[in-house]
Image (cartoon, rainbow, N blue to C red; front, side):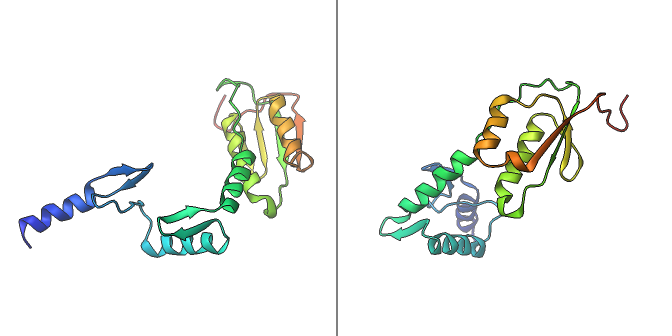
Length: 164
């Protein structure tokens, strides 16, 4: 191979520019780290079949249905600030049984518990500081998760194994 080919190949593969918030190579082709062409193609096909995107003369665009879908997702994944100190006493047990049909909400709920410095002691049993923020518990009611979650105040602070 020639030196010219090596330089062009390096520019093509390693130059990272940004276009409309998406990383692209020197020719403007999007770069998706660790994503194969087949994976990207099947994802686009799935999104097209679900009427989330459409292929226009200007390229792929989000449909009105897709914008509504994104708005619903954005509203359903409200983030709450952690008001607890790292060493706050862990004196509240949270148990939950969120069905598979609400998987995204269940993942969001686990993420929030981690953010509140809760630790998992079993798959759906977590322990951490109390009380849970009022805005958080009100939001659980709003997204219909409150009935699937139970909390129990501990008489003594939970001690993690291996800690004194």
